[in-house]
Image (cartoon, rainbow, N blue to C red; front, side, top):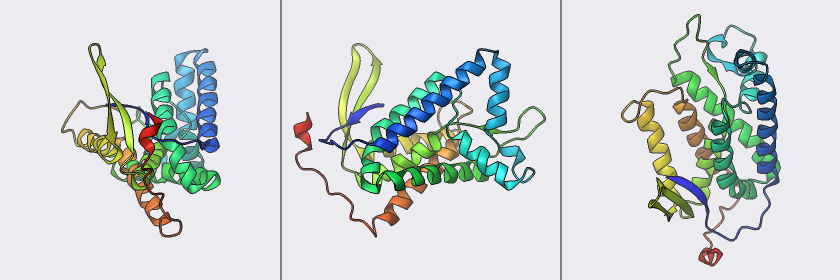
Amino acid sequence: MFPLGVVGRNKFIPKATYAIIAINILVFIWELSVQGQGMEYLQAALQKYGLEVCKIGIQPTNETILDTFRSMFLHGSLGHLLGNMWFLFIFGGMVERYLGSVKYLAFYIVFGYLATVAHVLFGNTMCTTTNTGVIIGASGAIAGVMGGFLFLHPAAKVRTMVGFFRPFVWSLNIPAFLFLGYWLLMDVLQQFGWIGVETNVAHWAHIGGFLAGFAIVFVAGFFKPVPKPDPLEHLAE
């Protein structure tokens, strides 16, 4: 299932979300310029500026904190970038509208750090002379945004494409709690090897980020009322 959008009449302009997307695109353009010198140069750059899990506790803490921050804006391929940015575009705006742009930016970074902590604690990285456990990507922070969205708008309809090849392509409006619940369940099942094949995806970062986002926005709900469902959202159709 692939999200196409969220049904609703939302005229809010998510400036912080757009800014995050723009920064990620600019960083990827820089990556392409490095790759132009040779793939080995890009791999060296990602290792240098990404977070190497196996160096945690060995290198100074401030370097680990900085590497974690930089890793949130690095991507390994165009598909990796586009997938992450599309999910952020779909779900980020309504979370930003609730939190406010400044707090949203701050929480986005917090989600990313907590997602990284989950990966470090539970990811079982195997450290060898050739593998230092480099992790990159915005997906942990974006998973936090998705968790926050789930708490804020569980009944919102996510316009979802099902299937990818004609004539087996159609779209459905699926409640957010089902779409996002399915997304989280797939990560859990893949993490434990119950479906799919082994990949280098940091599933624990997704799971940890998602749960962190849900929990943090849940706490925020004690200080700011959670928006009520829009009974006229169908008019956007």
